Image (cartoon, rainbow, N blue to C red; front, side, top):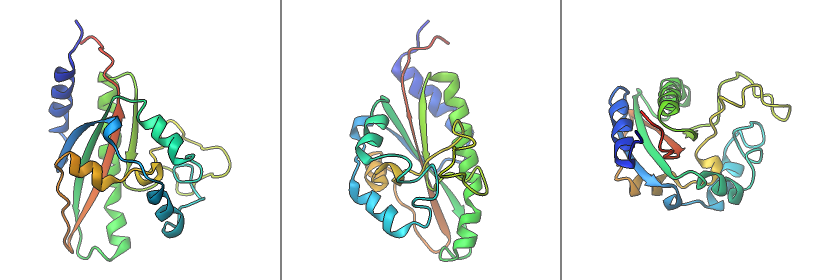
Length: 188
């Protein structure tokens, strides 16, 4: 028996309830906004630019990233929240990231049971290895999760289209994830 699109979304929503997801929504992949301006910010402001396989320029041009992302039918956009004493304390803020990354990886494992293919993105560049092998071959390409912005995605636009509100105060870190996936009509 093949599962319908509505049943697939229902199954995804059911397993999302098992994780500390704050908000989420679904979009058609073609509705995601890509911009070279986002990549400009990566190049000028991010210390990981040119130092990681999950960041530009290693991930390719924005046009190629867009083509890859929209080759999937849908995008699951979601947030997790972390509490900190002071969001300006980058060490404290970044220390909350591993919990978000665990959620992203867990959702990917869940999607493997429902979909033949997915492509996951997260709030920061990949941190599987303490030191990225770039420009040598990636040691764990099957587990690497690139940064949302590395693809040229305007995450605020995607969140707004999903009705996701941005929480900001001095004590709350909002982490984003986007997972592109197919509806492959697998039997259940």
